[in-house]
Image 1 (cartoon, helix red, strand yellow):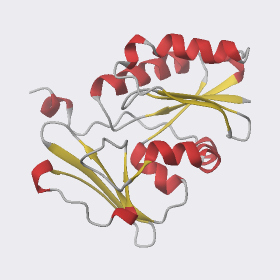
Image 2: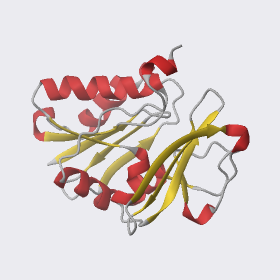
Image 3: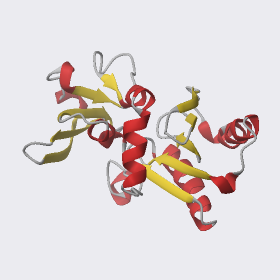
Image 4: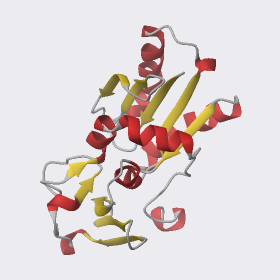
Length: 196
């Protein structure tokens, strides 16, 4: 069974996976306004391979990322779920762990002058999240670091989870599928904090 992957947390990534979760096609559009193209890009990809939506699985990134981008992807995921499609989702900061990385940290801009940091260590069961002022953040150990996307200035030298998902699709998507993961959208702050 084929699977569609959609990530609108930061730009737009869409891709088509085969039954073994290997990429048939992967598109990082670098689109700044995914809402303007997401529907046609999904349609074009499915139509290109003459696939039937009823015979597919659907994977989404549940964040963190831009509020609007996350709602865009989650809205499509909910419509598919209402139509009894198999919908799965995972968080970007979980991608390294899902790929088998035992220890590290994930960091990205959280907007409003803050940086979001997620640290994990599978051996000690450490998993902690924090928000810090961007001016106070410095890269600790680039070899252990991941970020959402290379923004060219703040997280230089860190690996991106977009690249990791592209390179380790079999490990990540098979684990998400096996565990039937369906993560809720993850915002950096509560909605009251985000919109005050």
